[in-house]
Length: 342
Image 1 (tube, helix red, strand yellow):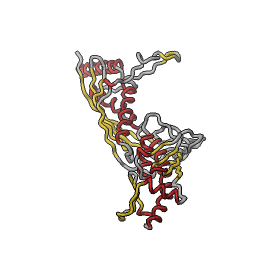
Image 2 (cartoon, rainbow, N blue to C red; image 1 turned 30 degrees about the horizontal axis):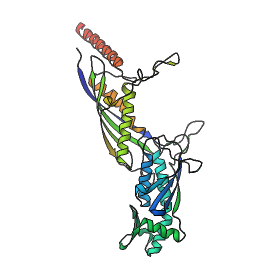
Image 3 (cartoon, rainbow, N blue to C red; image 1 turned 90 degrees about the horizontal axis):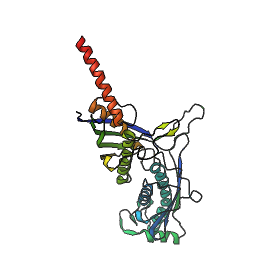
Image 4 (cartoon, rainbow, N blue to C red; image 1 turned 180 degrees about the vertical axis):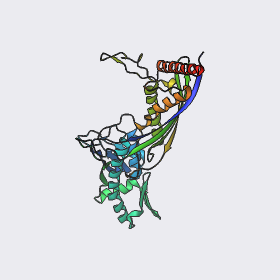
């Protein structure tokens, strides 16, 4: 008769973000527009990670408008600045900073005009949620719509451009030397599993994920990225096994190549560690790929904690777990026999 045994495992990780082997860069344009709205143009690609929401938040904060008043323009790179690809956990890190710098360039035209209009120091100009005012001057306040109209009627178009690079180096083509990353994301995860010693099935019961992701722009989005990474890692650790024989796949469909379903997804408790990155204007990092790095090793450690066997190849299928248990029992029996003989 088998039994169900529980165990917990932990793993920590670090991950360099942004493009490697070449210098990463991104550009953007920004404008405070009629009606107190804003336009942002950059060659960003939204693939479901929520970057458009993040850019709207960043632009709204930097320009002093509401997020819903930010329009993100055509991302065709024939008509917009280069933003490079959606990958390498670089979107928030690279594009957000490019947008922030473009917005600050636009404000560098807007703020001096308003300071001159109100006869105050430029450092006193503040804007938020569609209003602009002079700090410590309660009677100097107006809607952004009126302020932009004033600017344009006086020949000032508050438009700006920004370019951001992560300041790393490309890799030497001969010896591979270089400094491929400037920003690193750190994380630690704890996983709890239940292992059925009769069937070898591993059930993941919970994941506690703490990640240093720099300044948090959108907490809900970060948590969603962590949960998505964990689900991918569950498949990698316990189910997904792409098998080839003589160069041909024997797992051509999802009947044999098993993916996690909602029944396989545990409760994920995310802990967002805000340690602002000092090497970029916004202090942000990213969490796309790093979220899944520590999950599989934490699961393997949890299996070891539960049943005392190490699974050294992924995925930890029931067949592998049962084989490891049999090998452990045989080893223990041999050791017991030797001890008895002595």
